[in-house]
Image 1 (cartoon, rainbow, N blue to C red):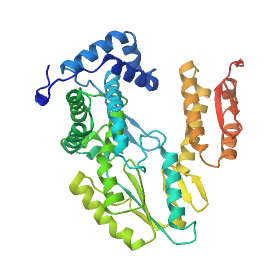
Image 2 (cartoon, rainbow, N blue to C red; image 1 turned 90 degrees about the vertical axis):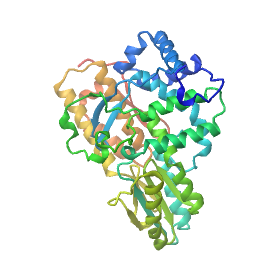
Image 3 (tube, rainbow, N blue to C red; image 1 turned 60 degrees about the vertical axis):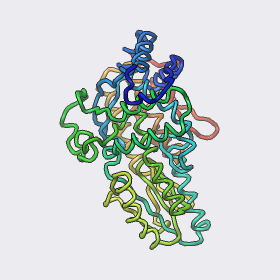
Image 4 (cartoon, one colour; image 1 turned 90 degrees about the horizontal axis):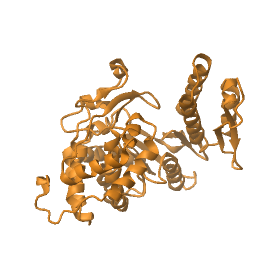
Length: 405
């Protein structure tokens, strides 16, 4: 067994085929229609058996990733791992996530069940109400951001922290295998031999600190991998505890690298900026973004996670509304100029309902109705119809009584 890194570990157990199958089912739920997933599913039983053998005999190594650029909600570089590697990512997270959840503070919001953007917005709104004593006292909001966060996560620091954590907290016999898988995933460089989807010019305008192609040596996790999202939370966990417990900050929340502190004393919040900056720099090798420091009285409002939090009301951010309008324009253009197939209809359905779901978390019923009825070309409704429940939740569904064009 090729596990020399952990040769001191005795009685190394194997990863069970049942665990790998559960990881495969979870992975398939989200990526079933991709080319990689379909190729894997053609003979998934044989592929899973081979993958299980590779993991247990130490020969597993990540394959090539596909690199591409997305422009919404902001311009980002994405690395899509091979489907086989995604199964491994789910396997790792299935094993470690229950242990992470016991360690994470309540108010870290990313990639956690029931703690998404809506939860984060509601929590910051609650912090402001509590700190201002229901808007009767002054309180201030400090919002900070980390420069090039994912691209500057130090792999050596992350792996050492994770290895210690697994040794202390993980009690199963396959501990050495789990650590070895984590090592391979963390230190894998997706830029090596990656397949570029799209054109090189798509990277134009992307700042170097937002690209793995420009990351410092042994730094950077690819945006797009489940392990990157969860391990980023783990990487920042010590920072969270430093703020909550060492500094004693009651009103604090973080979503990935975007974090907020609320306090009644503006000068005290200002004094924390160099303290937080030093902790990040010397402990995690990360840097606060100098152009993204926001410190204001709560009445000025705060943009956070797609919402604008103001006294007595939370508004949807203009950028989110603008993105929805742009999606509508693109859908209309396709209906006017291209042939429509099942794949395009499914994509339209998913993107439309995604924005309707986001907007439903705000008081936007009239706005949603207006966009759907006034902005979409009439031919759209030959294929879809609009339904709503008693809570005025709007949803577009495929017509079963499809009208002929």
